[in-house]
Image 1: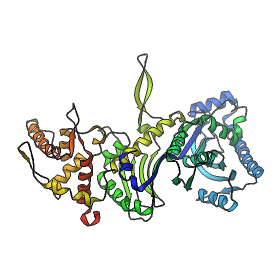
Image 2 (image 1 turned 180 degrees about the horizontal axis):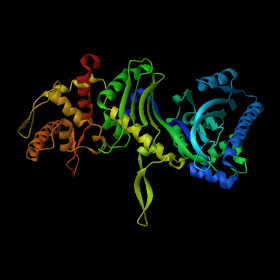
Image 3 (image 1 turned 30 degrees about the horizontal axis):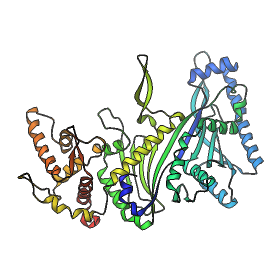
Image 4 (image 1 turned 30 degrees about the vertical axis):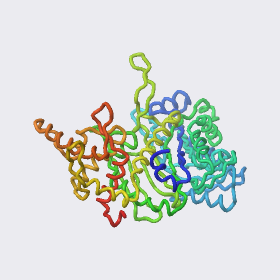
Length: 508
């Protein structure tokens, strides 16, 4: 239980961390253009110009297989072009026909995907990979173990396959099988009888035998894998996208509504680029190439949310149905995160920090990274409260304090310079490791030179930190020269910063 849940425990009835939307992608072992031409020339033993007509026949075979499966199950087969809301179409079928298991429908759509084409080259034509429109098959089904899911199959070589599952639907199926009480709305649980037991089940999701399961679905919906020329080829499975959500379930709408907009205000004002990188387990440095952006939509009711984006990865906070607070990490590019892996160095196996790759074998690392990001985000929001009680303590902060016959001046909460100091102390980069005197100097804009004045500026900042220390707002980390912000300091200084930017009338 983190500090956020402890703080609002009377209003919270449960908490659950679970994968939400997960998209797997399967690739057949065909690398670049040279490998493809060598395969056609030496393995298939056909002319390159005959490869395209062969693919056209195989494409029809895949479509005929889809039609046969739909007819066998008594389900619709639909061909659609242009913009089309597949999810709405499928949900309407499920509602109208009360489908609880099995194939729901097969959709055939025109999409632009990576395939091959023949082009002129010196001496003889060559096959190259290119993006071209083609038919794509979507098999929607309600699986007895995974709930509503789909398998997407490209009908042209290299027959890339995509599988969508939802961790909340899988967990619902598991809890139903174990006769656990719960109430599910869309992709969230508004009530769970045993949150701890549900969390233990949810933690199993990333450790399922995914390669075996994904290969079984691929064999069912891609009959070409049984063709002699592809029989020895297996899909290599990667994680294309993974969403990991931490839901804090409040007892009522009014209890969440009372703090939700303050949470949005605090995150918008206080969380900068370094904070977001810290939540995602990164550190801002000079070699970082990319954007860190925050997009806040607070004027929508319902639907207010905040989204932080670090390159292709996101960290979001929004409410579900008015009484579920969701913090969600979306991983599209796992190589932005570093994990410990065993590598050979000078002939010796060593554990090193390496970029996380998309392989399904790293699924448990996706969970570890995303859950840690969600927990850090909630931890940083734990300082948010009704500012009025906290502001009553400001009087003590403004008063002069005497310690061991030495007087320390108070702070002025209305002063921009003092608020900048409070923001520097609360900086998200200090959440994990604390901060040094030089860190505060840098955030306050003190220059790094000339060296002759560094001692003077260090002493000036040191006196500011001492004034915070004697009031119990920061504390020294033992056996180091680093400081950390205390729980009282997080609460009081965070409230002052919020009041400074949003005004007493809005905060009260």
